[in-house]
Image (cartoon, rainbow, N blue to C red; front, side):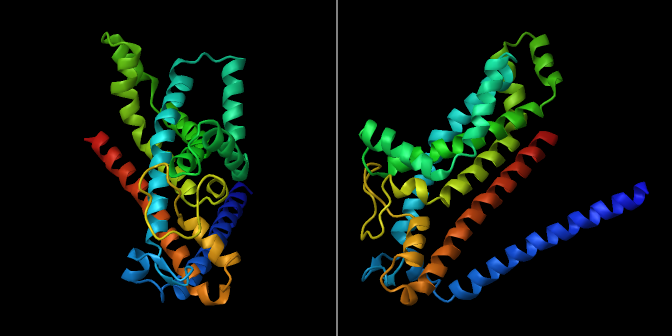
Length: 282
């Protein structure tokens, strides 16, 4: 009976996995079939023309990269620092439990709420205006709960003997964390951070209020300028454009480029994780 239950459970999980893979395959095939016809050097590296019915998506691609970079610079140091404090320094009491519960609840807040918060704090409160900086910091807040949670889990996987050995040799607590704990937790931290940034790169609602524009013929000159991004560009092409049937291939091409960028981020996470683990085994 035990073996039968195990066989049923394993095969059910296999079926569910194949169903998910099938849906993913259908989506990828649809994007490749309908979007590959417009992919070209001009489409990727040219500026839009004639109300985005011609030309390319270069400003949107650059804007997506800039916003993601600011998101990383804002969220990764704060997230890792908070995780180190919670796992290594904070005492296990009701206050720490409340902080952890709040962080996990923030991970479930709808992204449009972060957009409204970004308008109130960064656009109006701090005077950044509708800009790359305001959008990047808003997405940084969105990503922060994921980075804190994954970083703390990565720190928990490091054996206590690594800390105790460093302390026994006379190192301070911070030296033990910096030299023994963090290097061994880096693979998990990087994976969580890059996956969080991948999600932020595809968000539309938070940047809708904080600086994203539909049509620009130039690149942002500073972090205080408005910008184009691929998710919002795709949203307009798919739902709001005055000639949706005409630009439908461009929408599929934009979606294919966006999926490719996110896929590159995910692949880089696995490559970095593999390299760090391989370096630790030497």
